[in-house]
Image (cartoon, rainbow, N blue to C red; front, side):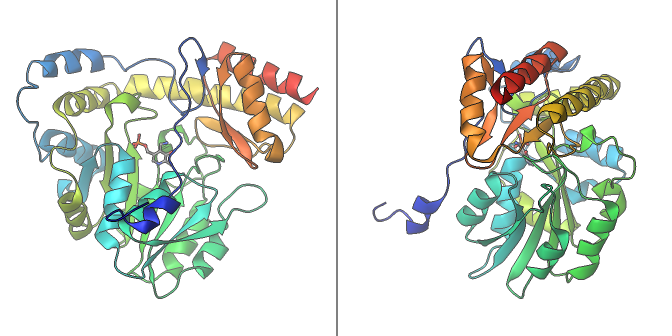
Length: 350
Ligand code: PMP
């Protein structure tokens, strides 16, 4: 790149969205397949009459509703244009020359992008052989320049969540000046009661930051609403970094309506998790080392054959998300969609 563009931007890997082809079965972006929750489309239609005005910049009603739901003070919440934007803003808020952020790899592809844009050095800690965070190695990677450790639980794209014992170890090992950022984008899909809810278990720790989103279980990926819980001064710092009016009016109204349809959200999540169990068991008959998953997707550790499998799926009209040389992430869809993936896997392995 040429001046005045920053040289380090050229090295940033591009965010690769899951492909979207009309007519294809889209299992590449971890969305839920059921459409918006009841009341959401109506709330957007009502809000549409007001789009000549700026939205509520403080996102007061939505923050209050979230705060009541989580049992926290609204001052501890920040909202943004998807949690991906908020992750970027948090990193901007803590970056200083030479500072570092530790996270596992492979994990969510936005972390290295957000870190570089913010001016933080990424310290990537390889996952264990069974595709989990290597918590002890992550702790060992924390040094004097570390500003934050990101724990992605459940981990995108591999699926496992960290245990309470593992996350306790991280909180107990790192100094309070280092933020422990728990990205719980897929928290609603966790159905192992032994796994920690970071808001409940760590919400009162001064260095805890928890990210959640309306994009996944709440069925609002297209509207871009994410939120974050942190200590009041950390939340305030992030709100200062957020672009003004980041969450638009229809999105705020839709998120409030979605919260009113929580029972239906839970019913849909239960459909996803029961399919997940069935599909992972069937996939393991073909590829035994498919890791356990607590999210609405599963990981096929195909190594050098990852891209080839994605192309094989695409020929059958199925879009999945390959990570070259590593594996393929497949979103849990409707039963017949999942059957189509299993069939593609069987014919690929044959
Ligand atoms: N965190 C993780 C782990 C994710 O997988 C995603 C979406 N792919 C996000 C955050 C961001 O979600 P959104 O910006 O839609 O809230």
